[in-house]
Length: 571
Image 1 (tube, rainbow, N blue to C red):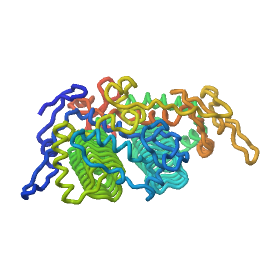
Image 2: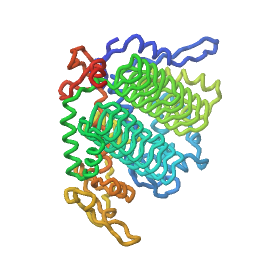
Image 3: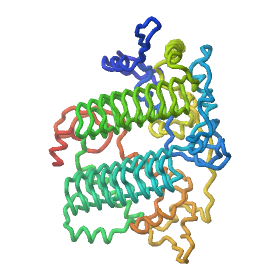
Image 4: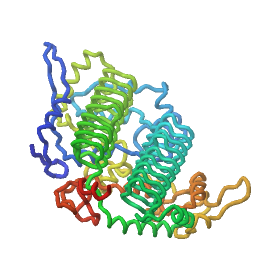
């Protein structure tokens, strides 16, 4: 079946297996005469990328604001700016018995569209300021669990002394500026590292230690500026130099601004001389996408591990699911949803955990059989937050679905204006950048709030910072802080002010690393740029000429091989 996306007018295909999936996940109800009635989920009207864009517009991971709690009036940190039209509660209050989301329940009005009524429910029901659980001394974080002494960490868990980290953790310790790194210690400015110790500026490596400016290493230690090595030691720019020369080189190397830039430039030149694998798919069967590990039958999926029978999923550990972002961990039959964890049979929903049989729900936890609900916990058989009996629930839901079919809402994810975040605060802006005018024209909302500038003793452009950490002024008097901790540094890229915290400064001094020239956000997005676009191109292997699919576009300069040729070259 060929269709035209109603948003971007791109043609896209729906194959027979897709139709079978939509039928399989469609709800079945018992009629009064005992017969089974299946209310089929229709094929999507948007292309896969437009579907993902809409879902990502509901995902604010890392934009934090100071504002008041609408329950206590105390100042809190929140993913919602002070100008948000929604009621925001501090997470401790939101999870407490101080209020009850079901008190906002209402009858379904068949004279209105479903999305109109859900919008009214969202406005009435308090939203949670942050999502953190079991954290200690880690207030300035969001979407995290089991962190200790951490700062500005997002979508991460099980770590200690982590700073400026995203999608990382799992027994991590003493790290800074990481993205997608697991089981790391004393690592800095790394992306896609699994089991790293004392590694700086490394990307896509497994089981490494004491490596610097490296990429695609496995089982290596003491390497500098190297790529595609396996179980090697004492290499500099892919040449073996021996233990003595390597130790001398590292001892004399200062991570000053100029030396860091020179090392990066040298490494970029080296990268153009070695082959790259067309797709990063490991220990998987019948999969198509990038960064897929231990999976089976996952098509057009990206950053997926231990998943099976999925399509169009990003950042997931998931089974038997389509069109999802950041979902998984013991989850099955999830469709058109965002941030669903440890759940089953969830459709068209956002941020729900340990639940089952939910449709069009937002921030619901430990629930069953909900339709169009927001903020409920430990509930069952609710519609628009109103409690029903089991019989009432199953009698009313088919009527609501038939109504949604008439209004062309059934089978569609939430409308764009139902996101509680401005488009520019969400991941959609990174993957699908739009100007304010473009976003509003497409029906998204926009956040115009600007945080106050950081007030510091000094406002200093980065070009005036000393190039070497040893030259940063130090306050030796006992009990007084270093001067730089009171400076407001102007980011070289977006001109925003940022501060250095004491733990961060101690790390730089211990490791002899210069002060960064970019704010935490710019550093984060520069790490994301190391990962290829989540898009597939057809091209030919540059060795055997076999046609391949790859995330390396045709205009890039890297040498791209098929899997067979790549493995022959590297091993």
